[in-house]
Image (cartoon, rainbow, N blue to C red):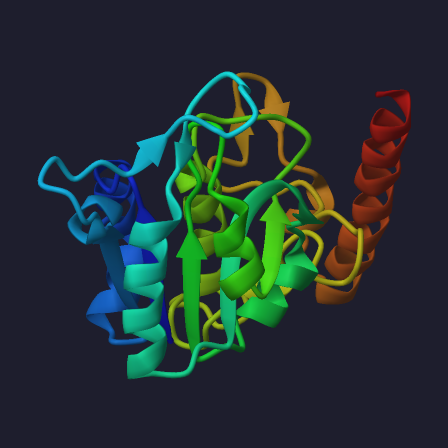
Length: 226
């Protein structure tokens, strides 16, 4: 998979993209990640990429020209399955969406900043608008990092344990994972459930399924209470 990220502040992306599983995925050549500085595609000598919105609204908006320049260049070089715009108006990012995106060969992420991006960029290029929740951030870089992490860990061969991603919360719908424990079996008077120490795999599986239902029901009640 190849992922291109277009950002006005690429410095926000560098460290997370070159750490832990994301770094390992690139070292294994399971994914290529290319971060593009929007300012490199500005037309004026001061590399200005933002301007005031028409109509007098407060704040600044990212200009269309730099986005068109880099997107026309990239799309002329290869076909992209998805060109994703981060937007509070977009479809909510879920595990199902992550699964679907993980099957793509080439993806572009467009990071908004300030008040967002001139809407002509969305109209011309975006195949998908995605939101990570009903709140506002300074820019789209953090949502993109969340999505990239969720997508890449699903690519076969990225995780050392191939079953790990398949057992994650939300992989089988809305169900959450059961509680997990590791050594020591007792810590500060708190004991690991006996069934997990029994060696009875059927009993362990039944316990996990029951606990998953309990945790999921509690989560649903909390959501309804919001």
